[in-house]
Image 1 (cartoon, rainbow, N blue to C red):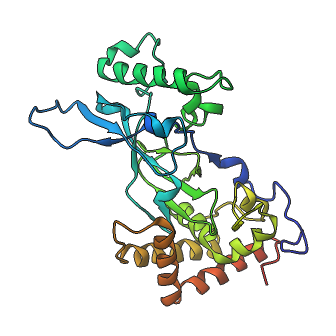
Image 2: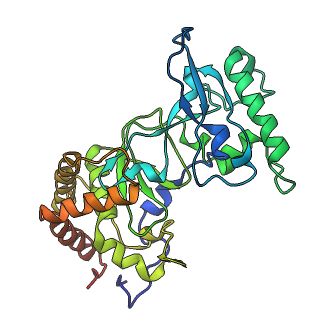
Length: 312
């Protein structure tokens, strides 16, 4: 079946559609995301982290009106957390940190039989649960742990693969990068899948970051006040084949993605840059190095070879 504006892609045109999952609901942010405190006059044992709530301008009431939660937790519960804002084309910004109720074997609640093995975390999580129960509203019957693990989107990430490919679920342009930290958790603003090799990850990186693919799915995106917004799994309606190490076209895409990674890694991005600006800067760098068009052409070749008509 042809792929393009004249023929709506099938919902299951690519097997990758079944491999990718949405990340976890790490909300309310102020109860889950944290910032580590600078060392104080009294030393904190290396097994503990002193933390407080990470706040943001997009917080909604009632959470935006609540004071920071502060305390210490055992280090094993503080994990890197990748949100949509941390994913740039072929590059990641440093992740946020989250207090994740997983001890390596079990997802914990305030009344779980194992939680008191970790007294610092137990105090933190029970305090967070109390805030959740008081302010969650009448419409939710879920506990805080059930909230962050809604539809197993948190527990389904454990044990994590060494390599995962993530991409943004909304925005004006798709952005994708490789996560190589198995301790990291992925937020619901991203879709993710384990990849079997760096080559497979780069192959997918090239496809997802390709402007040609963005143009192909544009007609099928829901539109908001500022234009098309949500990607969800639309990309897998295209006839994107699974990575084949023996396929020269696939290997070429992986090679081009490696080049793109090197180029964007060399671009200086001020820490104060908005992620939208950073993404645009990196896309421009790829255009300036004549790599964006080369990747687009290779992606079109892969789609054409798999029976899909590339964008015009």
